Length: 238
Image 1 (cartoon, one colour):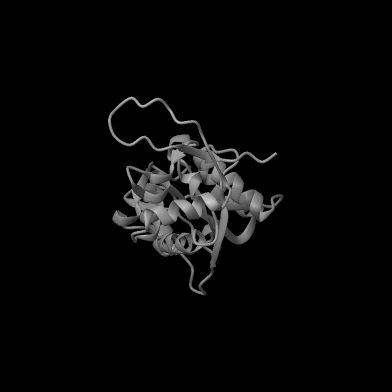
Image 2 (spheres, helix red, strand yellow):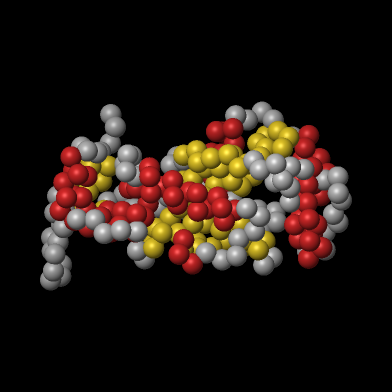
């Protein structure tokens, strides 16, 4: 379906007034990042719409796969954003004018939309981001240096970061941000970055190992001076 068909007939193939937006979180150079898409001079989250024949969760997984190429990603429901004035018709009108595309007030995307939001923890090295019909480029943006974000997507991004802080106190999912094999110092540094606070290293390691989730790997031959910590990976499920 090309852009014009999508604008004129997309409502026939998608659930009305519902969208999905995903905060795709990665980690690189000791920095927590999220995947953003550029539409002209505007940045926003990856997202999409729910096809008539899809479940909501299947739609979220499809959108995440389309944007990252990941087959079996971490994905967690975040929240519903459905303010009574959640219309973006004026924003769309201005955007279409910039790209010299015809705009009509009765396009279905001008309606009020409730968006179902998720967040996903990914290893950036394993992703193959792709842009959509309206996107010009993509970038991994630091949570500490976010650009001007379009629509209400900055609110969604900040909600995801705050939720992640709470979730990792109860769950063990942050390994999804690291390579398959990682050290406890790497995991410790990651948690400090997410929580934005110092954590006692020894106590943190004991807590992580007590979960029984991680398998210690044989120590590699030391190739350079300095510490040589053990590597770990998540235990396989039989």
